[in-house]
Image 1 (tube, helix red, strand yellow):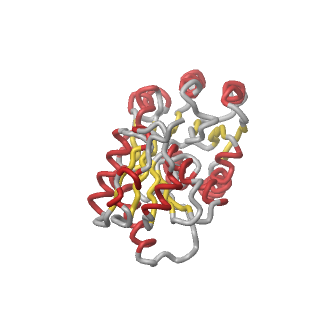
Image 2: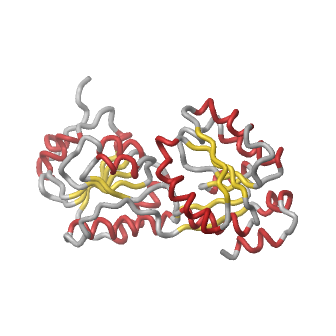
Image 3: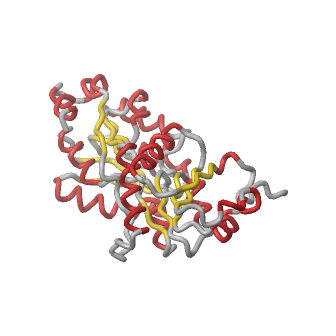
Length: 288
C-alpha cells in the first residue's frame, strides 16, 4: 500500500515547529468539544492530525522526523497507534483501555473513560439500592471492579458480578441476575456492552423493574434511569493540566492514569418513577 501520509516530507518546515502532536482518531462532535476546551486552555504550540482522514499514518516516522515533545492521543485509534511510540511521552484520553495499556507502556499515561466508582455509589445510595448487578470482562475492567468493590463495601452496597469473555455471553449472564439485584450497572466495558447487547440491559431493567445506571446520556432515551457522564469541557482542561505538568517537568514521576475529575449525573425521571416507589428519588438525583 502506498504510504499516504509522511508529514515531514510534505511539510518540511514543520520539523521542531511545535510542542504537542494532537493525534485525533476521527472527526467526532464529542472529541471536537474536548479538543476545543483543550486548545482554549493550552497555549502551547501544537499540530492536529486526524487519523481517519488518511488511509495510513506512519506515526513512528512522523514523531522521529518532527520530534514533538509530547503526543496527545484522543480516541481508540489514536491510542492504538501510540502503542508504537516508546520514547516520546503520550497522554491518552477518550479511549477505552488507557489504564491497561499504561501498565505496560512506560511513556503513556492519561485520563480514563471510567469514572471514579465512588460517584456511582452516590447514585446507588440515592436510589436506595443494595444489590447491584455488574457484567464485565476481567481482562478489560477487572482492575476497575477491584476498586469498585472497595467503594461499594464502604457504601453498604453489594456488587453481584458476572464475567464475560465475549459479547455473546452477555445475554445469558444478564438472565442469571434475574431476581438477584435491585439495580444494574453498565460499565464502559467494550466486551460487556456493545451496540448489539446494550438494549438487553434495558429489557432486563424493564422486566425486573430495576433501574439501569450507565455512563452516557445517549442511553437515557433507551431506558437508563440515570447516568454518570464525563464533563467534556472539563476533560479538555484536565488534559491541558497534564500536558503542562509534563512539558514543564512538574509531574511527580509516579505515573498514574487519572479518573475524569468532573462529571454530571443525569436522570430519566419517567423511568425512575416507574421503577421506584417514591418520586423523590428523581428529585434527589437532580440535585447531586
